[in-house]
Amino acid sequence: MALQTSGQITINDIVGEFGGTAPHGLNEYYGAGGAPSSGELTLADFYGRSNTEYVAATGGTITTSGDYKIHIFNSSGTFTVTNGGNAAGSNTVEYLIVAGGGGGGAQLSNSAGGGGAGGHRSGSGLSVTAQAYTVTVGGGGGGGSNGSNSSFNSVTSTGGGRGGAQSGPTPSLGGSGGGGGYAQSGAAGTSGQGNAGGTGGSGCCACGGGGGGAGAAGLNCPGNTTAAMNGGAGAANSITGTSVTRAGGGAGRATDGRYATGGSGGGGNSCTSGSANTGGGGGAGCGGTCGPQCAPGSGGSGVVIIKYKYQN
Image (cartoon, rainbow, N blue to C red):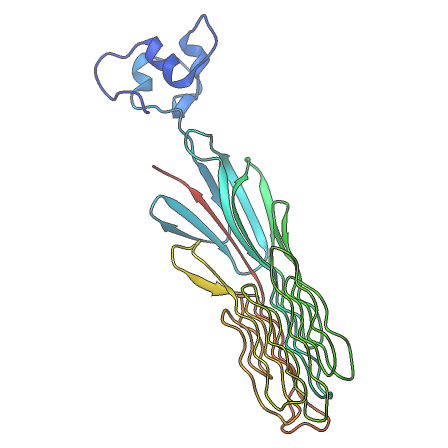
């Protein structure tokens, strides 16, 4: 609680707010709560002063929601803490870290799988101090390639796994795993970040599995069928003050050219890239003896969002 703003103020009032070591003198409290840091101090210099401090920082695109500031990084940058705050105000941050999504299964193959979503990690109570923190926002992987990791202050989300394809490569594990191509099992996701990709079917008209999403696994191809398998759903998060779903899995593709839908949260439809800054997986491509041919979609880039209390 801040000191009074008028009337009599005593050294004991100042000690009660800021602590200190006896015997107490005003020179012990230079700079306390924004008081002058040099020259002669008087009791009046402490009117309205408070020991409560809040995190203050720069970097990214900054918005506010009530008593909170939100820093959104759509590309890599630096989160510079200019005041680490204290327990009486704030000295920790909340975060959302989404990695880049994996690319869909590569072209010139049958039964390609969708790309897995980038890892989706969120939390609160992460301590910060006055220093510069590197923020890395992972890019989405191209067709047949994994997405890249995103990170902030010792927390890393893993890039999404690539989708598999009959002619190779096999699907890769990631934040969420890539869907399997012809007769391939879907790859695993990383615990706490995402889910597995779906299994690809086998037979002349089999489909590829959907890429895993942060909220659900990609769909399996049920044997020899011309269906096309959807990507797994993403996960919702309200760190910005509004619920937004991110990290959906990319769609698989059937050998007869049928299209499937990417998972909610930026997953790419068949032959389509994942949405930027969602970590969505890329949709599978199609070539060879398929129907309409198309290149696989790339994964969507990731995002890092940091939130903290800046006033009461």
